[in-house]
Image (cartoon, rainbow, N blue to C red; front, side, top):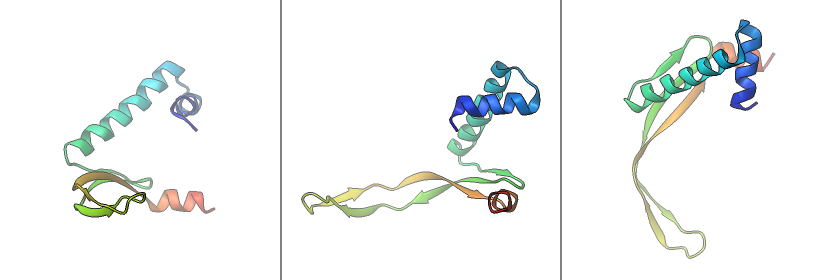
Length: 91
């Protein structure tokens, strides 16, 4: 399912116009992105948690040449599914 299909499904379930549902989906994604960018986390009870984790700098290898490559430290977004989502997927 892509973003347009998600917006259409939200429109059908909520009884909204597709344009309004697309705006709502965009607003949710923008809010999650802004919150994670500022170092916060988003917790949706029964669905899951969006958090930012720090990944340490490491040294990797170029597979073609075998030369060492420095990989810098960075922050990465992570999602962990909640109990409700896990149960829905496995039922």
